[in-house]
Image (cartoon, rainbow, N blue to C red; front, side):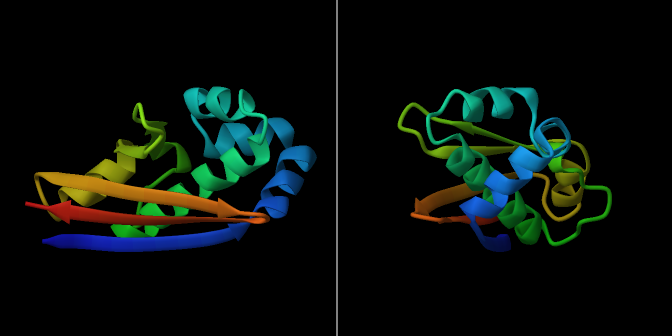
Length: 125
């Protein structure tokens, strides 16, 4: 059963502006330390931050119950092929567990010139 579907698109220059205007606060509020380390290690770091931000937005939309969710309750990692993996904890995990005791999160992300987009499906058993 599908618990929720979320999609997000945003302009990479907007994220680049936030990074330059609030370099520490923006990173600390939205991203985990491992996510910051990953994005900062990329030559296209603004695009990497934008894609992770879009994944988090799409995940929140898929959960739909946003009560008690913090940005860092969703952590984005990647498998050996670069496919994004969304791990839930804190409020995000609690809200999904209200709907299903077993679930999986499928995510896809893309970017093109100045846009980053993400698509997330949460399925429960």
